[in-house]
Image (cartoon, rainbow, N blue to C red; front, side, top):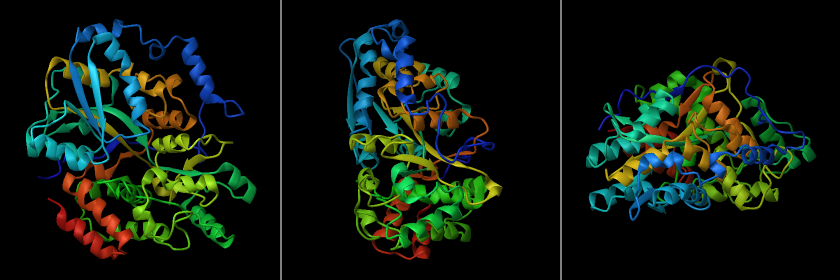
Length: 464
């Protein structure tokens, strides 16, 4: 299988004119109470997300009483609860039952289940590259051309999002959730007490890291453990640095294999990532040495910030759920917050890395088609956002239903046509690479100190 040339990774192209390096969002008061205000405004306005008893929007799906739709995803606790809750209006209004199954082994098990005759009705693909692999290898994914899900996708998502769910000209997977990855989590209180400032450039961030070391601390904590998907957080580091060091054009060439994976420009990126992740002075605060990064589950990797054992953790907007689970207050004046991962040069501005999920069906029963359309609808986007810590590029999403300042800023970034946005490259690469050797070789790079050139050569040699 070869990577479809239609994919450029450019969901939106342009330049960020004034992205604040300290994350702030519209509609918040000086005390950082914008989250509650947004929720109260949604209640006062009678948003449909708060009134699931209104079934008018669900009449088009018909009476689905007695049917069950099995949904299989990579989204596990604590993020899964909000998904399950967001399906309730669909269940109540149509009579269908949604059977949700989240698995940390999703990427490895999905194809096995499909080939074994145990395919789910709907799967959430976090990697369009994996979608392409499953479509070509199993011929089991149902096309969406001419369906209500396609109609909603065309109406509420930018064309490039539909393209990400398209393989060889056929539309298979509707976009659902999204995330922005170019964030660094930190403790505002710790920074204030130490007199540290939010870095505005990459050099500033490295200088801050050196200062933290000089002051007796460990600047970074990290973890790339994720079951069968172990290694993906390290690929995010590579992608963010590629955007900052060489810009979106080279990023696209790397993602589509127009330049080889062991190209000198890619080697330069891996070396820069290694300057942080494989620096014994920098990592792994509160968790161990460099090798502990490979053994630390990503969900726990940023939590040492709360104990003062590390100072910074690069991870996406969705990581807030793990701080929430730990009982931390996420706010500019709270226990933890985030700042934009700084740029490396003025030439490439403030690029943003992101990702998302796409819903694909393995059955065309009426209830399955109805639920897939629901997932592409503005009704579900607002319901899911109201459940907390979730965003989408769905233009029908009302920002008043987005629960946190970081998530509202992420929605603004996703919907801003001036944003230099690139979809996660590993998610767009062929499954053998993006969800295969890229993950495993980055893990070997950390866990076994495999040399940079051997890592890149191994990934290059695996490209189909």
